[in-house]
Image 1 (tube, rainbow, N blue to C red):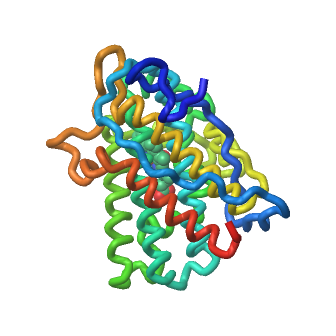
Image 2: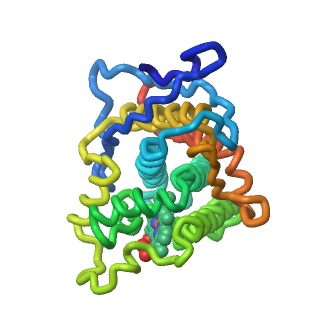
Image 3: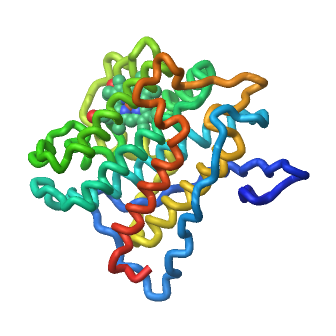
Length: 301
Ligand code: HEM
């Protein structure tokens, strides 16, 4: 059964998306991409426009499958966005990137915020009984600080790069502030007591992030380190964005779980997250187009 948007199981009834997880292949952080292989197929994964989606889904979903898919895929897309950001300033962190690249960075940060929202559309009770439990079994102190692709871009998210005060960086600064607010918001929504697994696991001997912790983190999110080309990198990002679009178009941002919806952002509490509710896919699509253009210029794809 194919999960294509246009396919239908009956009159007016779109076929449910497959929600099949796939491994994400990325180079080790800091390692360059491989040259595109001789005869490697060109970029045939061009973004085809984004579907509309409803905020509140209509068709009942299989909760475990949908929310585990969203948790893993939302993280994988975030890793790819972080990697794309690294490629813009990672080699020379003291040099301000030119304006078009600052725009790519801002778009990636906003798309990462959209993925924070997408990943956290899981009902709170389900998050605690399934997702958080599964993460804690991988390691009781597992944390976003272990994400290998985040480490090289962390200074940007902390506003620590020397050029971030330049007026040209204002849109990027705004996106970074929005992202911090989005992370705080979803953390408070899913874990109202505010303690991450890392903070809960008192007595964890070494707080430093070891290679083993990074590997456990990668492994949870089905991420494998191996050399890949830029074409393969962009292809993986585009494929996931298309799948997220299919999921949202079929299931809505807030899926129908046994007749109930579980909104993350509500009118009175949402603040800047409100714009992401209808605009998550647009933010993701925009970033993906800019990343593809940046990554593939000169590759001949
Ligand atoms: C939706 C997916 C999430 C992603 C992609 C994510 C990502 C991250 C990243 C990259 C960091 C490192 C920040 C840094 O080192 O500056 C981090 C830290 C943190 N996150 Fe998240 N996060 C997510 C969900 C959550 C949730 C649900 C909580 C709820 C408690 C949370 C609480 C924290 C806390 C407290 C930290 C600080 C370090 C720690 O104690 O682990 N995050 N997160």
